[in-house]
Image 1 (cartoon, helix red, strand yellow):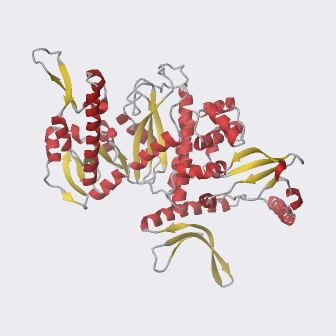
Image 2 (cartoon, rainbow, N blue to C red):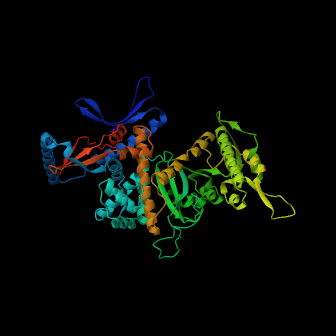
Image 3 (cartoon, rainbow, N blue to C red):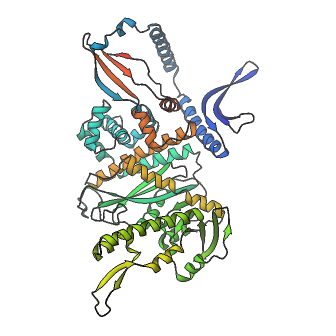
Length: 577
């Protein structure tokens, strides 16, 4: 079995296939096992080949037969023959059309069940072996079922655990006990979460043929529907995690938790780590990376992170590890006066394309890459003018010092002015034109600090620009999967909730990746809508007491997703026993 690339004459299209060779006499015949997808350029071809190798490895592992004794082989052969006979009889027994002769006036829709989520994400869940995250899966079957259903419910219709149980019953035909759900969450302790991270990391490495050379890192805050912080004591059901801190959601009076996420340049998950809500963003990256560093079997990895991770401690830790190089956003506006003058100087810039020009500076022995983008400058100017227009309107409507100065978004453009110099308390508030002018000088400028001496300036900018992958990942977790607000108060259950959300996120990202490579680009939200539309109606015949399942119409997109995941689609009605 091998991966074959077939070119189309006079076309950039290249078909990636998994092929098996069979010898027939003196000839060798090649049989296509699976058509993986079509690539239109070298980047798509490389990604499809990686996916094809991962699928091939999985197929080969499934075809590996265990060793059996002669008696066991005989028994297996007998059972196989019996199974074939039963299947042949089933094929001969066609449905009796008289059983399906019904009067529509006698039919009632008893229920309608969503099938797509469980068919597709359910199979992917099983492929990832997520059930092994829990201890003793064969013994704890109720907990194993609860974990799978709660993860799928978070993808389909994210809600509280109680709301998810209700949704599963009303829309998916799945009955769960809420107490069982909470018992399952209590099993997701620190060791289980470590196993989950390792499971996802290994799967991502396999999917990319161990070619993880760039890791994107970022952290965000998640708030609670609560105003009480955890108390630091050993009897508080685990380490305190709900703490007040700097909230990226503007909820500074509520406790929160800091979530650090690591993804590949394709947006595939690598791992995550939770920190107490009072942890500074810049203090999260090193503990997260140290925890997974030993898992990587590669020579060099480039870590990419935003300006929130730019501090002396982090850079010093990076420099200690010869296998680590980094590309971190630099806080250029807070640097020393000499460096800022060099940045703002128009000298030494080199154009790399029609939009962007760059120059490099020495910053404490490291490379500081300054890029200027016309598009970014236009965007910066637009956003500043929009903010000033809003600010002027606010000033016209209210002269209250408190209402203006308490607004973080406008404060930097305001200044206090004394209308009567003899009275220190006679103050007014007005626009700071000098500050606005100073800000204009920074339009379009972006700084990157790096210790990487191999990548070109263009490659450094490209890698840093790709940070949108992790930003999009947070958007998916926050908005599509509604990881916040968090309703739990026990630290152990808070961590379990994050683990469940990470599992849902992993499924969403993996399916999105496969659909993009093997079909076309569809957002996670679009895929979710497509699968939610795959439903089955349960019809009840009031005259015969018979029940029928009637599948809904399936869209072309849904058919393609089912084909990619190798899940059969039922399109005909059947009698329910």
